[in-house]
Length: 273
Length: 270
Image (tube, rainbow over all chains, first blue to last red; front, side, top):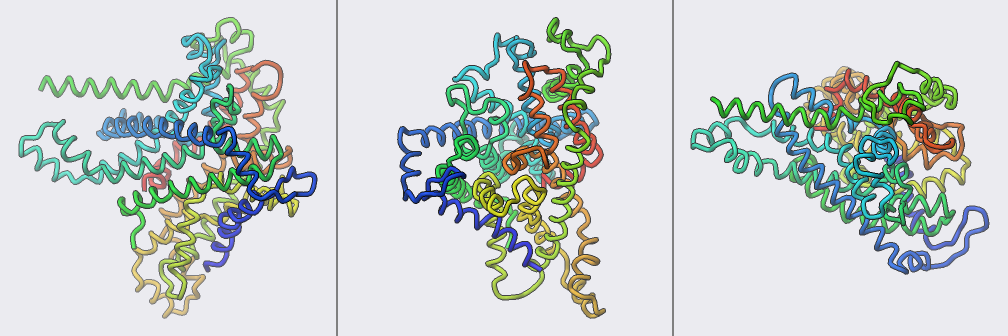
């Protein structure tokens, strides 16, 4: 009964890591026969600090997205955690962005940011996507708009799990709304926050669509994030070896993040037994 | 009392700001899709279309085989979601309820796969499919997702809460293991499975990344790719057409979301 699942998972999730590690030792352009080159793909990537720049850029993007979605998501969760159709509508609207395709979201923002006719682009006197300094934060804003709904929903589930009796006890002890938030709600939300933080970190670390559609890594490579760099190597430069080497490095980085993620999941009680 | 009122007004105001920030972009998308190109050139930020011009939609249907792309996309998403349920149910059962050597290790494999995103596997998987000439086929779009680590994990967690007595009673009545999995436990897990199915369907219907890297031509192109191409091809960017494509892409998903919101939220907020 486990057979098909384990087989498919092994072929499509575990075996590929091995294939990537193997291919990373060759130089291959998909047309002529591959040539063994040892570790020189890794050396070429590390040279000129390009690999480090891509990694740091990805970390910067992820940090912006995590900070933005967490603070907005928590704020919105506290806001919409009250009865009434109006707040239900706010909840639904914010979450809908998480459901809609990245394609729709990115094209919509490109139009709003358009330097000639976009409602935001005109107000900003030109599209920030054309500015090497502003392009990455702008992509992060779009990522935040898309992903905040997810953070909000998870925080909302955390809020609703806080026992009412604790609030009542704190109120009897004379705690005001602010005191109850600081000393009862927020400490109890810590495991939820760790869960949201690690999940959004891993999600934004894998960001690709937003780069591919909005900037293609430009301007001046200012938005070339990790997965887009891999994509460029294999499909634009036809360099299988380099793409594989990048994949191996990317996987190693994800493994480090996964350690954090598993700890957060355990704390939230998702992985029981 | 007055403070209460002030607080309520503040919450209401903040709610309006949030609502505007998330609803305005959609409204703008729809308004733009009903404008004509000269209208956009003349007054790009006019808050309404002069009249409901369907030219942009006609152009979308003329330049893009909308029906075929939609059929490919929906077929792919349906196949993935159905396969995930069909495979996750017996796998979750084997992990939660059967006793055998290696069970912990098998669970470890599932958990490990939960942490490997497709962004880390697409290069080698593309090479594997290229070797067996399966690039640009439905197989390359569906098969890698047929087994879901997340689905298996969620089914296992849900089955842990089902008492063993039910399974033992069924075995006493002579039910086969497959009968137990699909006819007895399946219906019991209905809420979990419905959420799983819908989350998976919506995700894959909207997915841009995997169909992009697994196809090099038009043969199994999906709707998100087609709509993204509306902007890339042609001279100048005709935003009314791109926004009309956007409406075609997102309206069905938003409608489905409005209908099944409850299930999707349970799937995500679990």
